[in-house]
Image (cartoon, rainbow, N blue to C red; front, side, top):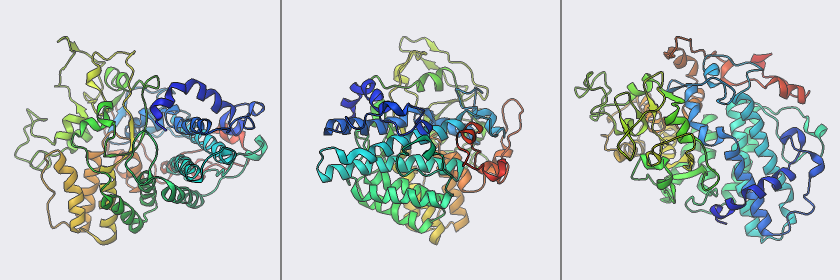
Length: 501
């Protein structure tokens, strides 16, 4: 069913989802309002419930339009604001990670379980609905894909977490012990394998997960586990299918007018109509995500050489002759923005002198606090699949032509020269990591990458933090976050992560 049509019923849907919540502990909704006995009587109701599962992605901004802020936990950017609304990301980047930090630490945990709760309620009740077997299996595949996504987020941030395979009957039944990371990963793979077997093998459109969405997410989890052979096989099958490809215009991948039926997007958090975000206002009007000089300096010159080596680099014109992705991702202090009437648009200044441009729709100028942003947050795209393949294949067997082809295809889109040939495995590893940083900059993936490469504790303390504060990332402590005190008080069987006791 077309999700655009379903969003006209979003207010009704939110009421329904609140009525269908699993548990007070999971979703903070009253158990005495459950109405599953009177719901699930038609395919239309099932589709409303399915949309409710997807809506959990944009209910929580960290799964939606604020995913770019995750780069402010890395050497790519810094968050301007430091309060609960903006997740205390600035404090967390400075090592303030405790059982009472709150912010994004609390939000990710609670929102993941809200999503899991909604998915489990769907899975517990779909058999009541009059559906054909094929339709039912597809819907279940979509919801199990979403459940796997929420659990994969918990693994990324907390390592161990609680597994709920269905809805607890009571609050007391929800108070169970956590499972270790290995058990969570096994459960995630089970959900994704089901999704891969039952989702349509077609391009992504209308917001519904497809087979390749699940395959790519599984590959991402494989890389987290360093299962490189499996990740290489899975991503190569997506490449070989020919269903997806690079979109011709890099910048438009992140704007609403370039996202409709975009062959590069494998999955995204959807926004349209009355379901909009404050993305443009936060990013360009307020300058809430401030790219760091360290990221800007990483962009090569157009000859493919770093600024430290290229004869094209001119310190007096530092942004000339640079990788075109720089100008499509970041605005510098030398850039002037004009409104349609010719007046100058003057956003709040950033402390680094740089603004994020990626995801900003300049067609909305003059952008104000009332601007309604409807560009989707891209969760998985084909360029990432190419880079995941290159990384995994290199770890398995070292450089081969397929790896060069994958990286050069990405660089060729923006007319950057091919990478140097004859690279060793170590040299290729560094090349791939550089390319991931540039191609996927400010998309929220750098934090995951630094942690799975086990380099966060090396790289982050080298960052210059505007304001003079030290960047702290302790090894191994900060590779996972603590469960917040409020969650420990709700569930006496939840045992704190070891480094935070």
